[in-house]
Amino acid sequence: METSAKIFSCTQSIELANIISQKFGIQLGKVNFSKYSDGEFQPSFEESVRGARIFIIGSTQPSSENLMEMLLMLDAAKRASARHITAVIPYFGWARQDRKDKPRVPIGAKLIAKLIETAGATRIITMDLHADQIQGFFEKPVDHLFASTIFLPYIKTLNLSDLTIASPDMGGSKRAYAYSKFLTSDVVICYKQREKANIISHMELIGDVKGKNVILVDDMVDTAGTLTKAADLMKERGAISVRAICTHALLSGDAYEKIEQSNLEELIVTDSIPARISHNKVKVLSCAPLFAEVMQNVHYNKSISSKFIM
Image (cartoon, rainbow, N blue to C red; front, top):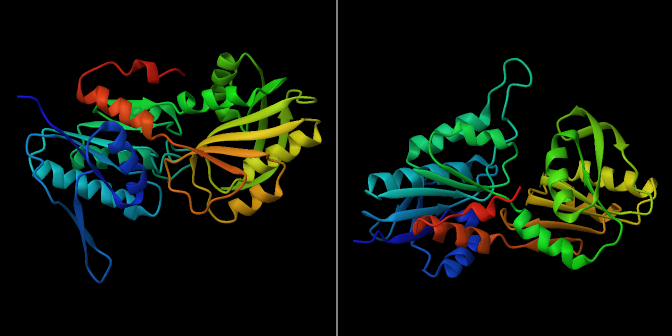
């Protein structure tokens, strides 16, 4: 007897999950969230999941309620006797805490990985982790997808001459070189020093961008401070145009205002995180077809190696 597939969503990713389920070819499963007056909530599946392969979709960006929703739904699926429980996490939140970079701090990404496994996940599907080594924090299979399969076709449609790929910091140089390989372009790197989290004290450019069309590549954009500062610096150094592609659009605080006032022509992101507002400089490409295809292949035990092109 073939195991049936069912897709459910946490509340923060309901729009994306609806598109994924349509692409997958099944209806999104029904979940009811009961809430208490003090803010506590309880999810319940409104249909049987016994013996089924369950996909639970939800990004875990702060607030912590988003993570808590995922954990409670995983636990509910486990206790309802689902056969396979896959946590589909388009954006894996808390991933910037992937190591001890100073004394007396947690390794938050490791803690989150253990929580997800303990809650009941038997497989994890995610996209563009902040650090590749986070996969090693899990003991269960992790399918780490790359948004380059979404961004590269779009970049090619721009038909930009004298294209240069840029990394906004040293840590993203590997990602930038991977993009440049597929686009046969030059690479430049920004070197930045932080005063504290989200505050840049100094930035310098390694490489020449004069007369170039530049595309900055990063895994996430939070306050947009790094991207906008890098874009302004590159325009000062003679770049013709500056665009940025970032998989996860956190866009917190005054990020939209910074983007509006910057030299960025366009910021291209995915819908791994719901957009707070629409903006004329922000182009959203859907990651739903990518996740739907990978989920189908996982369900039918087919290869997904073509989605690991970087």
